[in-house]
Length: 339
Ligand code: NAD
Ligand code: UD1
Image (cartoon, rainbow, N blue to C red):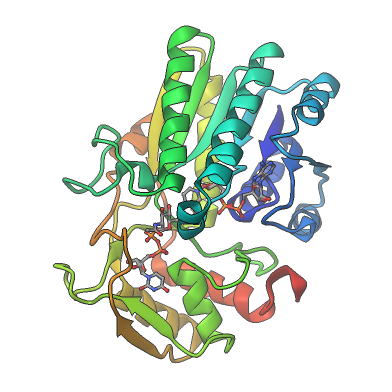
């Protein structure tokens, strides 16, 4: 199978490319490298001994994108490309809607023109907004609290309408919970630009000495220890979820728009994550409790029943493994791909 992977040089994309190459998929990665490094794919090639065809291009460049479809015949598309920083999306909403929504529309129009009607989309648990009831099922109500989240929700609406308009489309929208960790080799991992927004990359940078301490955003939530609870999922488990989604789409009976949660179903608090990371790294993580971060929810975790039923997929890796692999990547590549 020949698969187009948009955003395949990024954090989740590179881990998914690695798993796909190991299963002998042929891959074309289309990425503008706005938030990634080509080194990630070079390392994936080294680890797998297989080649990835890379095209540096932007989803907003319609001519270039169309050329890719003229030159290759694809069986399906995995669509990771997008901007993902919540705070930045509040400051630059037009850039986020343009890149994420218009970029996806460009892709879908060209896919339709070239009769490629299978797509796996990178959605997010952010489409559930502030959860009314936990765990979150695929039927939980959707809402958003920031432009990034709205861009994901708008894309889901577009995909749903497209699936309704033409029964040939098979669309799986994977709603990721909190992806963390790295490939066990320590060769590829998450390499955020500037100050990390997310918890695990921040803890990793404290552990390696790049930052003095972690700020815990509030310890007055009504949770087991007062700190926020999330469903952290190992990025390699997440990558394998994409392979399961691709396999599911080759089943002739599957059609339409199918949203699926990718999480573990377990919630861990910030203090629990710090403890697990300290154990994995042998380092102490100094922290200070500061005020809550605007837009944060107390608790969020997935109901994973449907993912197992539909895909036969289940996350397997523990938080110990997530922390150990994140640490291996961070300690051997303190400056990410610039190391
Ligand atoms: P990432 O930034 O590492 O990867 C995204 C990739 O897309 C980057 O390589 C970037 O250069 C590329 N890209 C962005 N805009 C592009 C455009 N217009 N044209 C071509 N390439 C473009 O992010 P990630 O963590 O790997 O996330 C992948 C996807 O999963 C994103 O859509 C993100 O919103 C979604 N997601 C991520 C998380 C998370 O915590 N990492 C959670 C939920 C959903
Ligand atoms: C954030 C985004 C969400 C996105 C997800 C994955 C917000 C409001 N939400 O979710 O849209 O899909 O990342 O990319 O930004 N924390 C600290 N100190 C830190 C960083 C985080 O205490 O320096 C806490 C947070 O308050 C939260 C938990 O750690 O309780 C996890 O935070 P984070 O990794 O940013 O993920 P989310 O908030 O779940």
